[in-house]
Image 1 (cartoon, rainbow, N blue to C red):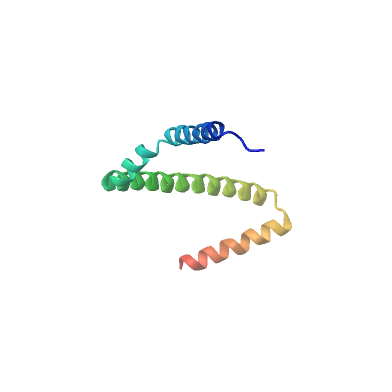
Image 2: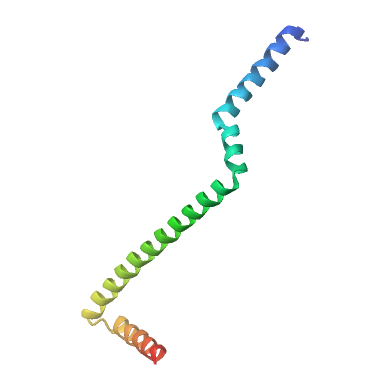
Length: 98
C-alpha cells in the first residue's frame, strides 16, 4: 500500500527541518567563520597549546614530588629491597652528574 504523496512530502519536509535545526544548533556558520580567520585560529591554538604544556609540567612536578616523598618514607623504614634499590638509583644519579 502506497502512502499519499502529500504525506511523504510532509515526512521529508519534517526530516529536512529537523536536520536544519540540528545544523543551527551546531553553529556551523560560526565555526566556519572561526576557521576562516587564520590569525584568530593560530592565536587560539597557540594559547591552548601553552596552557596544555604548563598543565602537564605542573602535573608532572606534583607527581614527581609525591613519588619522591613516598620513596623517602620507604627509605626511612629501612626496607631491605627498597633500600638497595634506592641506593642503586642514587649511585646512577651521582655517576650521571659527574
